[in-house]
View 1 (cartoon, rainbow, N blue to C red):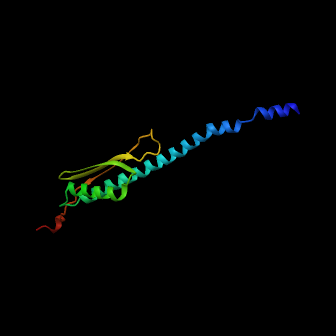
View 2 (view 1 turned 180 degrees about the vertical axis):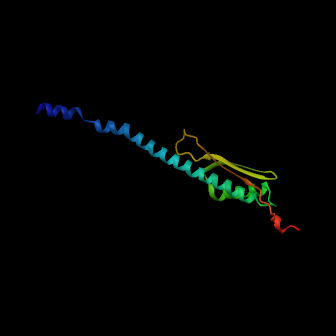
Length: 135
């Protein structure tokens, strides 16, 4: 009986020690899961904004400024705080349009700084006639 009492007495506080070690790791794991979910969401927002800017700048009589304005409008309505300090670049040549959106991700874990970006590229739309219809 003395041996059982001594064993029980020696195990006192073991659960508290385990919780002190385990609980911060559990919190950190949860915060990391939230951080990567925010990064995934920010990546999708950036990609959508880039595609929308491309769609606005592609028509024949559009310009890169129209695509830039569309991207800024989408950032104001969709990105909120998830896409921090977004930067938009829309370039248009005679045949191609390129749109790129980059920004930081809202931080849930202070030491982890992630970035999200989206890019889209496509041809400039032109109205043409089929060769058969020309005189």
